Structures are given as C-alpha cells and as structure tokens.
Length: 95
Image 1 (cartoon, rainbow, N blue to C red):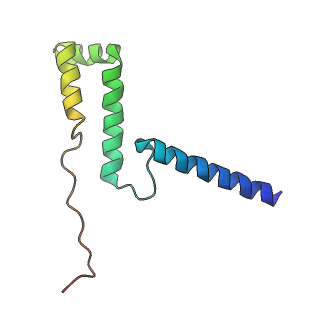
Image 2 (tube, one colour; image 1 turned 180 degrees about the vertical axis):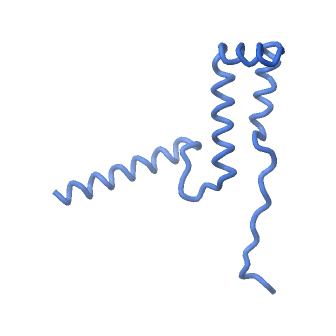
C-alpha cells in the first residue's frame, strides 16, 4: 500500500512539473510576488479582451468605444504592474 502511495505522489509531482513548464502562469517555488501578480493581471486582461461582452461592459462603464478599450487593455498587458522592482543585492559581498 505504501508503494502505491509513493507512486501516486511521484505521478502527481511529475504532472505538476509538466504543467509548470507548459503554462507560464502556474508558477513554481521560486516565483517572486511581482512575477505572480504580473501573471494574474495579464491573465485577467487577456480574459477581458477575449470576451466581447466584457469589452462592451468596460466600454459602457468608461464611456469609450469598444475598440479603444480593447486597445488600452492590450497596451496594459506590456507592463501591467509597472516596472519590476530592483534586484536585491547579496549581503555577503561587502568587499
């Protein structure tokens, strides 16, 4: 019985690794907060642009044309959360 549980655990982990390599937004252990939130925003914007009824809703709410709202959302997809934070410096290098 324990061999089956170990095999199942290995199978689930291999499936998770396959998903993480195939789809960018699924993340992994080393994903920073910034990368995670950028993926969330891009997924949301792609969903809104892909659904015409959502574009209509946003266009009415913003009093803009549907194509302009779609264009603005596509532009937001480039940098949805602004510039990335500066990389942290290692504290062990004090030379």
